[in-house]
Length: 262
Image 1 (cartoon, one colour):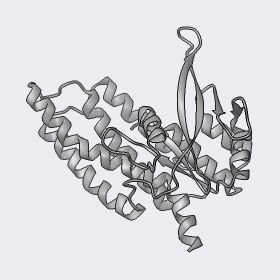
Image 2 (cartoon, rainbow, N blue to C red):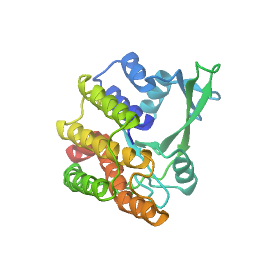
Image 3 (cartoon, rainbow, N blue to C red):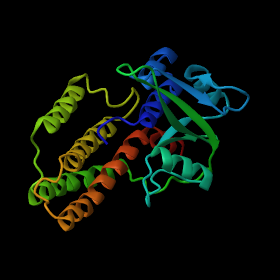
């Protein structure tokens, strides 16, 4: 939850490119991020993997008008609309991009390459058919914002009750990294997104930070297996709320386009 999902970068900057708000070079640079390279496989009309610039242009030509994000988890097909084959691939990757305007979806597969000490990630996006239907369990931005405010309170209470420490080198490094990202020009979304989407995504990342620290800080005060299970059960709905809000924020561009077309 702390790291920005690759599907989020692809959807956000892909939407900005489709809207003509950024250049292809800038969009691809933002999507690739710290990865070595991204390629797209299974694109109609292409027999081999192609680069992101060509792929985004081809998707636009095929009728794609926007990109949505899915962040599914076991028992929670968040943002998916089927068919089962696509849902299964997306669930395995824990993320996917679903096209709006054409029945395609993209699921990332990540490979590690390079010698020890200099390992880098290479990403292949697999294009698959999807069912054009409303995505599962995605709230509106307003709903997501209200849910997040409550989830933040719940997460803080849970951590306090279960004596999960928010200190130590690992926790402090995570908090420092979060603050550094927040101070880098607030680049949590691409141009063209409404301010409320930026606000919701930032709050979702903050809630996700608390959940990640709770899971990553060992047992804290939970000394028994029963107490550890209680912590997991208490944090699960908080984590789900943060994922729902992330999807709502990334999908805000398409939702606004749909409202404007009505």
